[in-house]
Length: 138
Image (cartoon, rainbow, N blue to C red):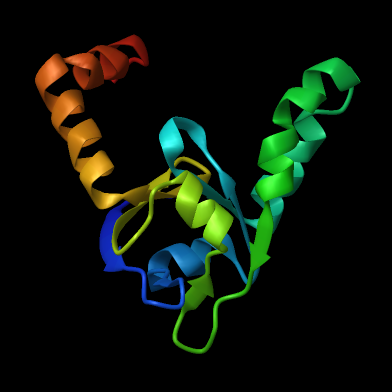
């Protein structure tokens, strides 16, 4: 999954998910808190894979993910391709109007546009992106 898309959340908390990402994510989108104050969006397959990876972990390890599970919501896009983001998720990620949706590996992320811009600027100016690419053999 890849790409970057700018969209707005409407007054009711609905967000358009780009067709390309909807096609890759499938019919139900599993939305929860992500790292760095974004929202993570998983497909059925991706969410099942994540849960499978937790098998064999102790409850002490798993309970550290309580908030991720507590904030999880399943969203089915409406006829216009929009999902309703609950207020708690919007608040966590500081999503008010302008957002950026990105595809990253096996999921999508939803970002506050200003925070995403800051992260983008830092990635290009710090050299961290090039360093990470080099470390991964690119």
